[in-house]
Image (cartoon, rainbow, N blue to C red; front, side):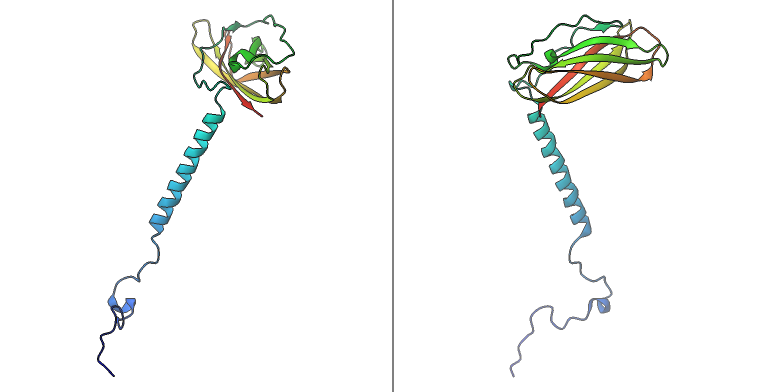
Length: 180
């Protein structure tokens, strides 16, 4: 037999004999860190996808200024055409018909009439703010409707959760329309 030198690592004593910890196969810190990074990237991609889907049909992501306020009374409803109109800003699809505070519960609400003026069945999310006479925001509410066919209408209520005793004004602050 020849006197060959064994490859490195052969004949080494077992790890416990060296006095140190056994070598690691994988670092748990790296695994956890990479997992968190993956989740973060996934959430970021989902946010971008929702933002792109949430754009208006014409691709204009800018929001228009709030619609004119309706005070605490019944507003005159305008009759909406049953035929779908040209694609437009979804804010024009929503009208406040009533803005009131319930005298017994002191809860406030805005009755809304949503008319789908787009060419596709749509879901709506409408945000409403409730302000006092000095234009100070007292509360906010939200209303939704799903699968509203083109040219159809839906009556929904944006309900606030706070108790209010002052006279209020209701304003639409945001309308999101998504094809369903």
